[in-house]
Image 1 (cartoon, one colour):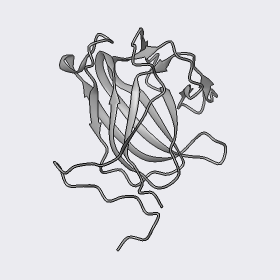
Image 2: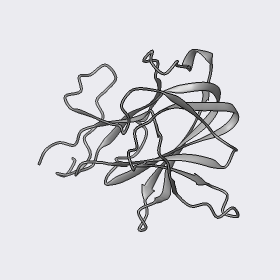
Image 3: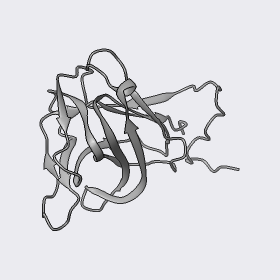
Image 4: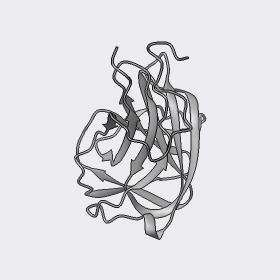
Length: 176
């Protein structure tokens, strides 16, 4: 039995989902690409979830160029920054995944294996191979950062003025 306040159970494939949250910081208008400068730089998005535990369903992103990326989910740290890694997913972006920024061709990653999420969740995207890039919009959301994962470089979270087209979809927590 599940206690009140627990994340909703995931429905079986094909079952009806009654409430879904789609979290995004963009305006759905890809106007420029973001190419990763090296293997250690990571684009980070901060998502503040509504109260309660939520089950992750999907992550959508608009890819501009092919290559291999890592999508990493982080818990929030005491310093309001990416903390402990929740899960990393490796994804190869191929020609059929690529969008022109306006065609609605989203890369979709199934997240149903993630543990329930609460509070603030950070999503990082970085390149692993090739020259992948993501579409961005001119929206300044205040929720997008760039960081260098190499601790010897000393680059912390730097605010970014362009917002990648990345969306986090969640199964809404049941109301209390």
